[in-house]
Amino acid sequence: MSPNSKDIDRRVRQRFTINAPLTLLIGDRHIPAYTRNLSNRGVYFYLGLSDGELVDLEFEFVVELPPEITLSTCCRIRCRGRVVRKEKTADNLTGVAAEILDYSILRQAGAVV
Image (cartoon, rainbow, N blue to C red):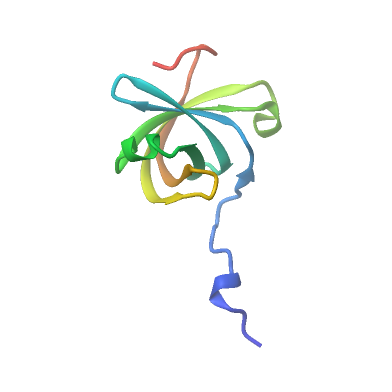
């Protein structure tokens, strides 16, 4: 019996199911959001329904990774992403799946620049 293609997870990278703070950097605005899951190549996050319209094809964001992921201390990563899909949730949020194009580790814990 062959498996149904919908039952096959085609992700190659390990994906962490984690609720971590994420800040979108859209123009001069810093928009709060939080992750549902993430890997070194992609992220799925939630933000307010009205703010979802501000997320364009490519965008920048900062995510704070907890010690469970870094196996050390909290770490802030600045990323450039590309939207793969957006969807409205039943909780009046916007869910965004994005590919991570590149990233850099921020030196100062509080820096968003």
